[in-house]
Image 1 (spheres, one colour):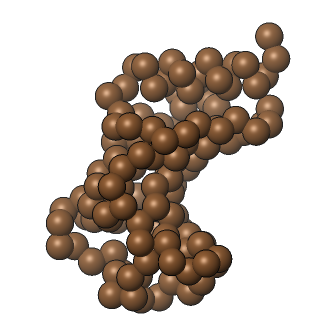
Image 2: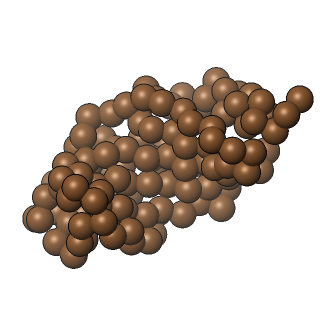
Image 3: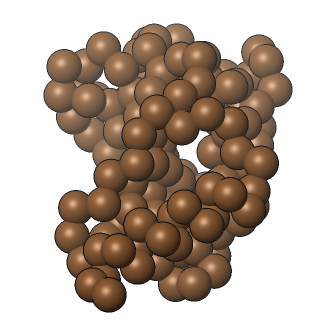
Length: 129
């Protein structure tokens, strides 16, 4: 069995094992990964953060980041980690850019952040800055 099939089997098993919300897409592009999962959630910070926190709880070596897309109109909230079988995975959801929420996030920039910030953002009214 080739490595791509192993990655596909691993993400299928991971999705089956856990009670994740809807997934919009899963992408496996190479034998070295990561498997990329796009969430299918409302484009609101608390909903995306909540879905990512759920994913983070099932992964090892978890890190988080934000990325403002080159168009500047949206921000991807991202969790990176490894499934227990060792395969790397990146999970993300998009939210609309707001200067009030992301005041220090220039167009096209990536910023690392602690995973606990996602937990804070799951509460309505929390500011993502």
